[in-house]
Length: 291
Image (cartoon, rainbow, N blue to C red; front, side, top):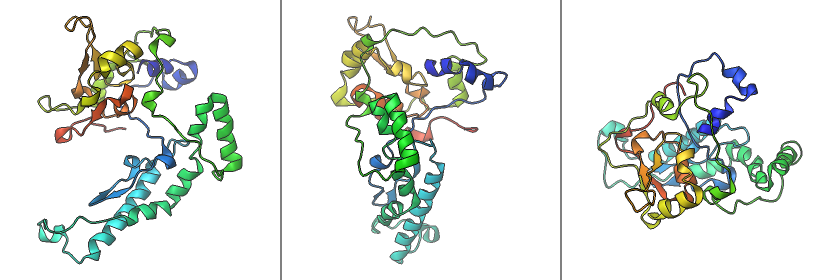
């Protein structure tokens, strides 16, 4: 969060923002796995579309067009499946038949594979993976892919480990002292959080839960080895650590789930992926109106 605030003070960025007014705040992780990371797209009674399926073009950083197209293909597959049995639609009867089997829209998956969605994502499938070799090799490969290979290379650059395993120990870095926010171009986190309009009922079970098998990770690995990175990358100050005075000097994790803006970074980047991100009750979350 603070690094992004500092980014806005760069002269080339600042000149576009000065004099403006911050009217909204939000955050979202981009699932950039692309073509190689597309999961099984259908299941009994439903399917995955848009960002849920990972249809983002990571090079263009665009996914609305693929999301819309996948929705169209899913709708066509759902219509075909629902009309094939001759059963009366629920909209007509007003009742759900518990004996009626869940519709199978497996044709949706093959429709996506034969559409321009797959063609577009396959063309750029190796670009981001090329940056695993470093910035300069990544840029060179991106240019080679865009202007020469155009996605026709017969190889795959594999990603061999999850993002959560790529965080390096804190001892390898010097702490960064960030300037205080000025309230005009840069803002403190809690002030920005108010702009997101996020809301969760305070008496509901926390939707962010530490996995039972990784219960010790926050106090034995995340904080002592990585200096609690969740305190810095979370854009809503959901994760904090105590000073350890209540646990024999060992800092303990505190989860402020009510602050969550549903960026999903914690489920991806936590050491050992120790957080289980579940859906909040009652439709809680950010109230984005301008984003």
